[in-house]
Every structure is written in C-alpha cells, then in structure tokens.
Length: 312
Image 1 (tube, rainbow, N blue to C red):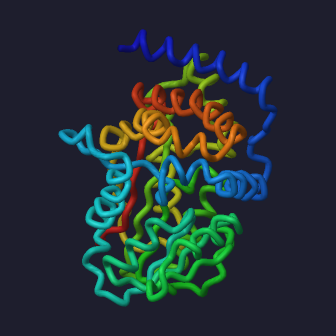
Image 2: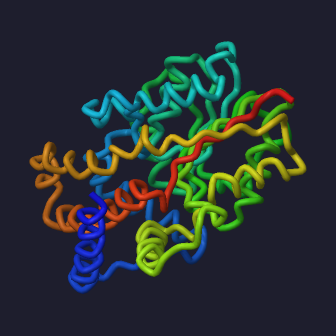
C-alpha cells in the first residue's frame, strides 16, 4: 500500500508540472485577497459546486460506512460535529456564527434543522452571493462578506461559533483563535474542524513530505497548516479563552472523502462536460492535489482535527 501511495505521489508531482505548463494559474497565498480571489473563481465557474454540492468540506464516513454517498457524508459531517461539540444541546433561537461559510450548506442545516439564528460569513463576495441565492426565504441565515480575522461583532455576541476548514487559509492562527473566542459568550460552544499537519513532536518531515506539503500549501491558497496541538495551544492561550479546549482526530472518518471526490467527477461527468472545456481542464488540474491530499492524510503527514469548548 505504501509503495502504491508513493507511486501516486510521484505521478502527481509530474502531472502537476505538466498541468502548470498547460494552465498557468498561480494560487499561492499572498494575502487575504488571494484567498478571496481563489474562492470567487471556484464559485463563478461552478465546478466545485457541481462536484461537491453545497458543502465545500469533507464528509464523515466512520469506520464501518466507507461506501456512504459522497454528498450524504458531507451532511452527516455537519450532524456529527453538532453532536460532538454539543451544539445540539442549545435551544432553538440560539445565535450561531458560521465563520468561513462557503456557499452556506452548513449554515442552512444549522438554521433549518436545529432552529438556530445563524450569521454566516465568508471572505469571498461571490460565495456570499451564491449562498443567498441557494437559501430559501424563511431560513434564518444572514450571509455577510467579512474577514475571519476582523469579525464586526461585539464581544460575547454568539451562543456558538462554528468554523470548518478555514484555518489553513489564515496566516495568523493566534488572531484567528482570538476572534473565534472573542465573539463567543461565556459558557458558549465552540465547534471547529480543520486540516492539520503532523505535529513536530511526532517526527520531522522527509524531503518527499516537504515537497508534498509545499504543493498542498501553494495549490489552494494556504499560507501554513497548524498541527492539532498547536491550534489547541492557540485556543488555550487566548486572552478570550472560554472553558477547557477538547480535541479529537477524525482523520480515519474523513479520509475517504479525497478518493470519493475524484470518483464523483466520473459519476457526474456529464454535468462537468456541460460546464465547458475550461471547467473540465480545471477539474483535471485539481486531481494531482487531491491525490497528494489523500496520500498525506493516509500516511499521517496530515491529520483532521476537531476542537470544542468544554467545562472547566
């Protein structure tokens, strides 16, 4: 298995080189504007939505449900994080902020199925516009363009703070942690899920791992990944700390998402072709990075961490 995965990595690196020559697109992180630009582009061409649906995050499969539907696994992820974090204990009408809401998939579930009053923010104006289009009237979701490092809300505004797969796009992890906790009321619930790198205490990276990591950062506008212990430390050291910080590792439960996202391209090939040749080429361009992600999460270079507040 390791030989197969290593072969896939080497193949992916060569394929990336080929695609770079074919389509010269630079998506390296330079500032928050580069993140907004990347998501504006991914939303405009509708490729990501066509393949991933309204949830631009990994799915939850569990140990005994590896054949679960790709899009249903994403819905299941939302419910699993709600249950694990304790959001399901909040009464209807509770105020929740979704930091990094994408096109609003999670926000709509939190509002419609749990009765929360949701404010959802993204750095991408095009994402927010699409989120509004997809949200039926009567669903209590207020979508706003906003920077996660500069939340325009007073301290202790929300009963819960929700943020999924946002941290890799943020350079200042401590400020990100501070802002999440600042707007959370005392006794409120924090629910964060993120892609994380292996902690340095578990071994230095090899040359191949460093090459892979560089691609994972540059391809999707990531300045740096944090490890699970590192981001837990950011939360625990925040001047706005609210209760104990608890973590869990959901790598095994989410890892099938990477392979499934490629298979989904074949399942929905007609829809992808209907978007035109440019979208098709963009889809092909993403395959090497997805394969590298699959390898990184399978070998332990990357981990999927979840974080919540708990009682003292």
